[in-house]
Length: 423
Image 1: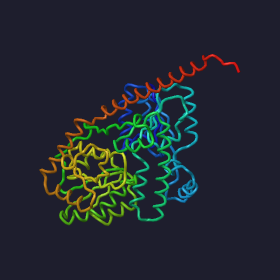
Image 2: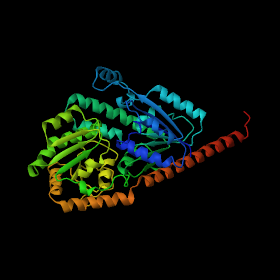
Image 3: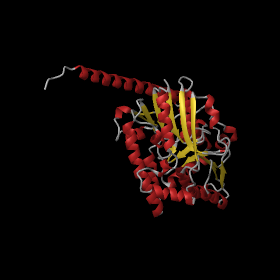
């Protein structure tokens, strides 16, 4: 099967949930299928995407340099787009030449399948091409913006979030109808897209984790260490850690004064860094080469997300390392976890703090929870298994598309062969 895979946000380094999921699936599929990968992403100084050329049949790259959101140029760009029907998060990166280049490529080469990886990539996909298309959704993007709107207190930002929510909602509806199949990463996301699309052409795939890479490091664990990992330039993560530090962490330290919170992830905002400067028990690392030593030293892994959609790979990574995890329900949304068995769930600050304190003060309970978590992901959620599920869906989509096309050709031929009636 010859596949054209179009993705927004790049692939490497695999330091975000979307990058990790796409990279692992593509790596497994490329061993069996010729794949042309077309990527657009924010340009970086140390761009390492060229290293991927040997892994795929063809690699097409469009590094983009949008203006910084907080700059005058960034604000002007947002103002120009404000009255359009396009989400600003899409307009910042999508360029007309990307669609033009892909149309030319499809005219030159025959592909069996096109995968649109993230709905944000949809505007550059040639949807009228005579090739079956799969929309791969890692999140319900509209839900993320709606949840930002719900938790935001600043009226100006509420307007921004509401606009992104409404424009993204229209976009998700449009492209889920155009796609021949929609892939989601959780059953709750699948139910959302079934509102726009036929349920028979919408499938949820499991989330995976590399259990050989993420393994328990019990000797490294340090008492009273809390760990949060994630890209800090993703707004839901920044909101989560700010909320945790201001509302939940003080409650934990009332019972465990020596508790330390480690925030591990790239591009922390100035606000997050100031938070660490004011509170010596909060450590902000910025970009790290390897998150595993930080996770290994943690006694409890926390996921206090209030905004998000899809599934959080970070939870599976922590579970694979045998960590006791405390999460909000949104943080664990879409994952096959069970409260009290392999994870602890809490939405209220008092309840969240109580769970964390209980685990910090009870080593055997921490290890019991972490062991159950490791067993769950090790037995059922390898990336190879996820890739094979994707492969089966892709095969079915290609086969069904060919059947429909043959039926249309046969019908047209039958109509053409009908005897003409004299007027």
